[in-house]
Image (cartoon, rainbow, N blue to C red; front, side, top):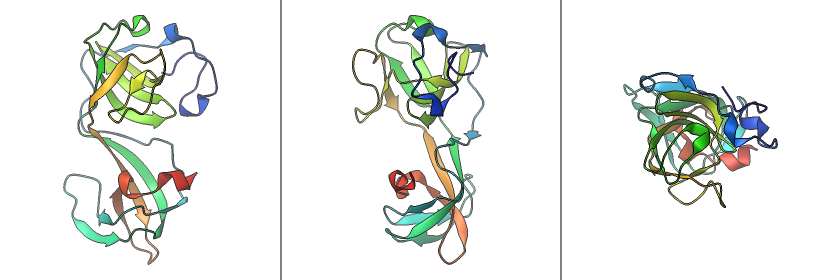
Length: 184
């Protein structure tokens, strides 16, 4: 469930109140691996390859490399998938009353959905498509200003793309190999 009055990743323009997080009670974190589409890149988009990219037959652990594609090559996105084999570990640096969290608590982030939205689990609550703009990324990106109240201490999810190469072959590659800014 998203923050009341907002409807997920595309709602970054709305003003959401802090006290409106919707907790869905689940005593244990979701089972892994967890998969979901992010909705950030549409099927059919052409994107350039940013660096030499290995191409695999699947995103699953049984994958095997079937080729590679050179930097600068344009590929078509057929599907994108966030694969969480281990969630990102987020350390709470100051109390967050709206989620009933205290300094030192841990949030498990299962998917970054863009524009500060994410799927989160903390203290027995699942927050689907929640406003997570209070999180600072390991490289310092993300939250800025006095709203910051948590920092990622360990990354765990992978973002896979099913792509079509110029020769018509298809396979899976990781997001860091693609220039997603050019995808729009």
